[in-house]
Image (cartoon, rainbow, N blue to C red; front, top):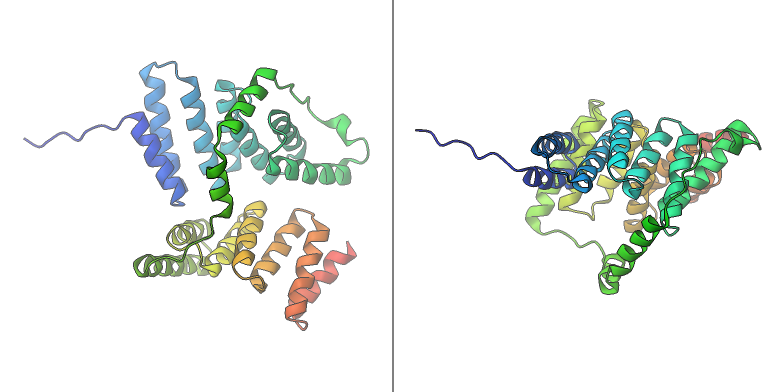
Length: 304
């Protein structure tokens, strides 16, 4: 008799989803998180915290794939289960911002800062939303905001305890840890994955290309062109903050990388970060003074 296939537990499915997410396989991660959620909900276990994490993790996968509407739904469900979960709030804020729902994004970013004032992404988000809302709604933009919830002291204290329990040596090693060059096998695999990504870009399939570049970088995090190519995909998918992040990584590895400066400028233009956009375009012109494409974009941005 053929052996029955062993069914997976919700924890195994969650772990498998985490692994797919780290490998940049966001569609597969969504599928595994969905199976895990279904099993946990059917089990009857009153495990709100784990269920909240699963919804938040699936939301992160949706966000990476550019599916902002589903990301918002999952973050909202996660926050119903675990109120004031800062990761769910940040992810929902990013999704709202991508959908140009700037007032809701502002509220979520501000709520995160009530929980922990030391989260740079929330500060950056508040600054962006303040500028955008001032431009669109004028000086009285705050009057049009939805209510900003008040975070209970117990939530703030829990967050503070979690932060202080992180060991300093670990934090320092994360900050100081430089990207290591891969071995021959990993470098070969990274190159193949990058080339597969390039093929998808030529076909205009940017989501598939993005996954390939992410997988390539997991093998070789020192490959500059994988970052700039993935930044191009993020630009095409209107995921501008992610594009900027990849350009930052590329410029740490190659401080004169023209594609990184130019693509970061394009992302900053879309995010209405005029000053940063102009700085990046000028950086390109210092390296290539006769670059007519960059000159034209610089003129366009300066005229606005």
